[in-house]
Image 1 (spheres, rainbow, N blue to C red):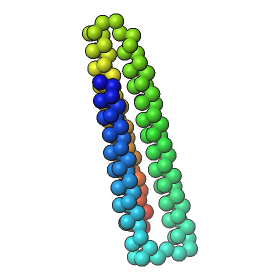
Image 2 (image 1 turned 135 degrees about the horizontal axis):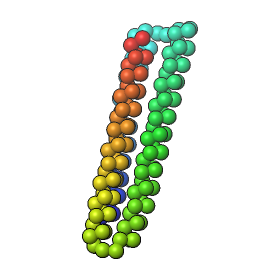
Image 3 (image 1 turned 90 degrees about the vertical axis):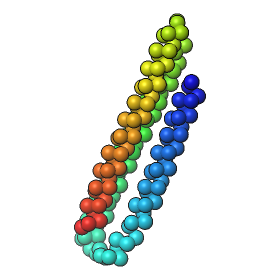
Image 4 (image 1 turned 180 degrees about the vertical axis):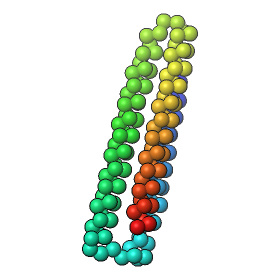
Length: 132
């Protein structure tokens, strides 16, 4: 049972990483056209660079927070998995296993929701920067 849970978490994490890589590739494809349409000089260039740096910094900060939350949830899940050995009856093992499974998937759902909200916020900021 644990192998299946860990395999599912691993596959979900791999999918998340692949989605993020594709997202960044798409974003990078958008930016080469920006300077060609409206070259930035002087103060506007400096202002754009500052806002760009702030946006990237915010994105990295959010990513760090999400990664820390994932790591914390993973450690808690491992702790709960080891507590299964303390169960005295098969019914108790079943109940704790079900609780662990539900908690793992709830944590995973929360992490994905947090990532999507962060992604939406970054896209909004980048679109705002690109439209100026």
